[in-house]
Image (cartoon, rainbow, N blue to C red):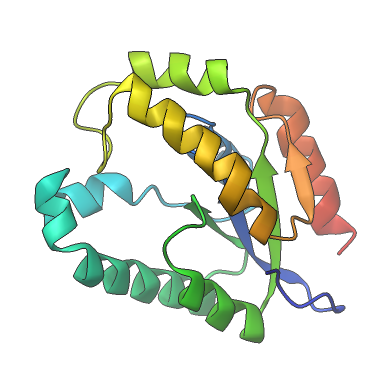
Length: 176
């Protein structure tokens, strides 16, 4: 699954990877440098729908809210809009956007040990789904074995070198 491979400018950048890979950090840096528009949705989602089991009860409504948010961003932003995702939920939305806009699928290829180390030091209450190290490791393995292969990534970045990752994305956007 990927966006339209035509000559339209890139309107959306999907940062895809498991938790702890650096999607939020990369999105914030691309936004800070004026390369793309990024809003961290996790705090707003927690405020609206809770976290953990409470969020799970409202997952369908939360996804509709997320999709409406990105539709609005795509209409209003003069920059490419960044969406961070694991690529598991929201495939219908990704297909919808991909049929209307040129999208860049970016895989963060952060090593498992780095993701787990980042998750260990991440402040609690910052993420909707906070699992154990074991469940996070299982998610990481499953994502690489079963989710990532279902996408046609236009770019793979390290997830560990923000400067290089930003340069690669900037270059890809400017040549698309």
